[in-house]
Length: 232
Image (tube, rainbow, N blue to C red):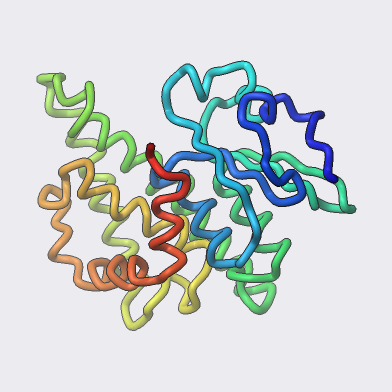
């Protein structure tokens, strides 16, 4: 049997089957990237619910896996060279899983780098900017009377959405073929509704994006991954 005792996180979240990939996550736009990818790629895994509460993500056990105290993170007992590997950062996890399986990262070197290009677009733009918009629209930042912080992130969200709307012209998926780039981008588009800003960003004036998110949500693997692990 595979021994994961070298990873302290397994003391807090024990592995029932240490021979398969261990996922530590929560169903946020970042968290579901990993679970959706695992479902789409057909990788056997065990999901552990790590909430966003400090008692979980800032616990000594979890920090031993991800010192940045964010979800998701994984331990793959069957890593490179047959040795276990632990990874955090959702973008790194997506690239690792895609290269491990040879799936959802393009059929040629050029397609691979175009896929990574759009993945980085999400990691560096869509995620951070939408997250900040959510903070100023729904959470503690909404109490700030100065309108400029929210306006800054609202305008940047609109700009990023316009880039995606144009990129999807005549295509079902961001690179033309379904990939980890879509798995990274689409959950954040759904987050706009949760933040209550769909009307503010003009969501329904972007038909390519509306159809794109609907297509994404219709995928069986997405429907499972969006709720893995369960919120509780």
